[in-house]
Image (cartoon, rainbow, N blue to C red):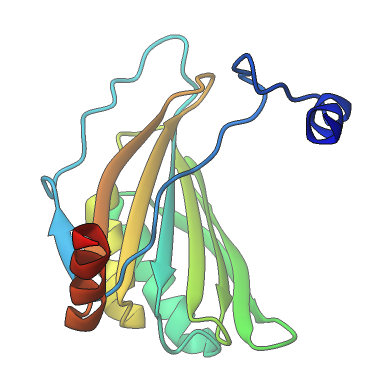
Length: 184
């Protein structure tokens, strides 16, 4: 009874589903293997959209505290997106890493990188049709990332469309443990 009262106080109820909260049951794996097609789905522009935003997450990346490397990688990624760079500002952040923004002719490109965790997050917004898979490959190559993921989102819409996900193969020991757990 106390458990149900606690759920009620939190605004949750076990007897009916709620759209207010959604659990993410995804899992991260390592040692890259591409799943699905390498090309992203076509996102058509319409009167209702104000452009396209893509999010690129890099895991296991290196050289994330070097501003010059980040600058070269950002310029390469912006070129691969087919956008024109107007200005670029990158700085080292406390604790190791780089943070910055690139102003583009029709949008923006931002980078947040943490060298301690080997994680870099990029978001790019543009009005033209973006080629995120090319930018993903340029960034993953420049930072030597172990895993890279693209999320593409259309403005004025709640629809998240995974365009490309690179998931790693599980080590053999982990595969054996999973097989043993299933057998038991």
